[in-house]
Length: 526
Image 1 (cartoon, helix red, strand yellow):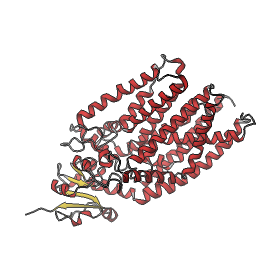
Image 2: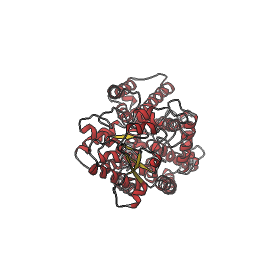
Image 3: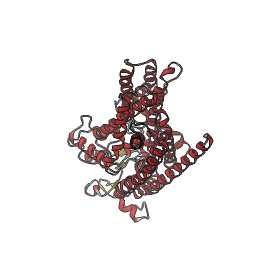
Image 4: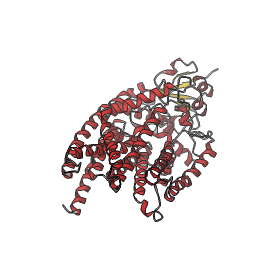
C-alpha cells in the first residue's frame, strides 16, 4: 500500500470518527434541551455587560469574578455582540474543539515513538466517551481547555524530540499553556508540573537542570500569562476567582476531600472501573523497563518514556486536584481535559501487551501488522463497552436522568424571557441558577449560591464538603435584606419566607415548567 492510499484511508477513518463524534454529541445536545447548560450562561452575562460598557461584571454595580474561564468568556464577546444565539454557537465551538482534540490525539504517537494504531484507538475511545461528548456541547470552556492542554502537551513532547536543533526552534508549548491557564486557572499548575517534569528529565538523561529552550518555554509562559494575571488582580482584587471560593475551602476540610474521592470513584466506575487503567500501567512499566534496559539509547524508546511519564504525572495531578476541590456536581466535566492522555496510555498498553504476546524469545516483534490488527479489534470492543458504561449508564443515566436537564433549560429560558418582557429594567431578582434567567431577563441579579456574590461566596461554612459542590453557601437573611423584587428558584423553599409569596403571574402555559420553577414576588409592606 503506497503513501497516497494510506493517506486516503486515514482521511476516511478520521471523517468516520468525526461523524460518529458529532452524532454522539448531538444525542446529548438533545438530552440537555438543544442549548448550552445553565452554568455556561454565566460567562454570557459577563460578556453581555461588558458590551454595554459596564466592564466584565455580573451586575453593573459590582466587580465580582464569578467566572474562571477568562479566555472563553472573551471569545463570547463578538458572538453576543453580533446578536447570535450564543448558547448554540458556543456549543458548536465546543464540538469543533472536541474534533480538534481527537485530531491531535491521532497525531500524538508520531512524537511518542509509538505505532500509529495507538492514536487511532485513543481517538476512538474519546469518540465513545460519554463525558467527552456531553461536555463538548455544554457551551462551557471544557472542550477548549482539553484542546489547549492536549496541544500544549504535544508541542512539549515534540520540542523534546527537537533538542538537537536548539536555537533554531521556538518552544511554543509555553504560549499554549499560558492560553490554557487563561482558560482555566489549574492549567498554570499543569505548566508548573510540565517544567518540573522537564527538569527531572534533564537531570536523568543529560545531568543538567535546564537548557536554553527550557528557559524560553518558561519565559514565553510568563510573558503571556503574568500581564493577564496582574490586570485581573488590579480589576477584581482577588488571588483566585470568586467562583473558587464559593465552591472550595482552601484548607481542604476532610468532608471536601472525601467528597472529591467519591467523585473520582463515581467517574471511574462509569468508565468500566479501575481495571480499565491496567493497560495504562502496562504501558508505564514497559516503557520504563525498555528505557532503563540496554536499549535506552534508541530515540523512540526515549520518546515513549518521556511522553508516557509526562502523561502519568498530568493524570495524577488532575486526580489529586479533583479530590482536593471536592469534585463537581457533574459526572465527568472535570475529567475531560485529561482524557486524551488517559486513552493514549490505555491504547499504548494494549499495543504493548500485544507486542509481548507476539514477540520471540528475544522480545522482538514477529509481526507488527498482526499486533495492530489484534489491538484494533480489542480497541473496538473496549470502545463499545465505554460508550455503554460512560454514556448510557453514566452521563445520560446519572446527570441527565437524575436531573431533567432539558426541562431545566426550557423553564429557565422561558422565565428569563418573560421577565424581560414584563418587568421594568433595573429590577433586582434573585436566582438559584445564575445563568439563563439573568442572561435572558437582562436584570441585575443576586446569585443565591454565591458564585457571583462576594458576601455569600466568601462566607465560612463549617461543614463545607458535606453537600452538593457549589450549592453549599447560602444566606437567606442576607438575600431578604437585599430585597429583590422576584425570586426564581427550583422547588418551594420560599413558601415559608413571610416576605415573599408566589407570584400571581402566567409566565408559561406549560404546567411542567411551572412545576419545575417557581417565581416568588416580594410582599409589599404597608
